[in-house]
Length: 319
Image (cartoon, rainbow, N blue to C red):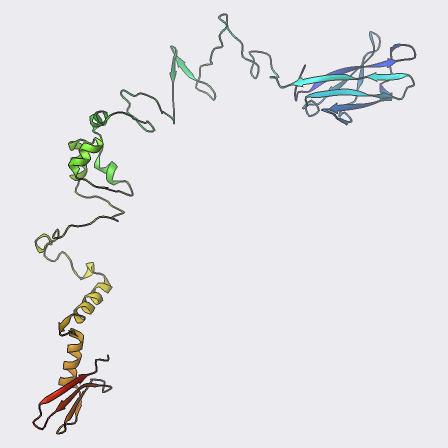
């Protein structure tokens, strides 16, 4: 069998059926075909006679690597010489190493104990061996490893009981609060210590830290009465700390405050301004009117009796 995809030489015979002998000197009269897995085509190379004296009728041709890339190949053809036939030669190809056993690219060999030994080294596809131990440089998947003292625990998966995790006690505040999103689902520091196995010392490291960088405060709440006047330092909140629209919202809330009998503070101010500063008309009559400052509306209309006593009042609170 030949190696698939490797250049090789194939011999074939030209037979003189008239004289019943191998035909010599007939190479120029051949029309050859290479049948590759059932497909016929002209071979790339030309044939030549092997040895007309000692091997009459035997010819050879070189099959290229491309032509050899098949399962079965046959060299065949015909001769223009009368009575001469080309006897086909069929080659079966297999995918085997194109090198001697034990050589680079070849099949591995065994020692006297019939064992295949590994090649120790630090290069590509090699393992560093020392006294039967394997030295691992970088192992990204350490699942299942048991570590007694490991200074670099990156990528290790630790399983065990709460007591095992208690013994670690190496959780720092920076490791907790440096995470982008924090979610406390409930419980106090004490219950967290009991439930998940963080020691009190570990919890103190977290909650004893002065500053926490919480980037996501959604869901946090303050109980009633938590913030009092006593806990806010004097001048702790100044004008720069208040949003621009906060002032507007505060003012709007004041003017919307109901003072008396559904009368808001804004309505009260408008009516008082009209009464104190607006134009008036109807003096000496039973109907007195007081205008708004823009002299657009009758802000107040009062009905009075002969003694000037008000018997009815109406208002226009239009801005």
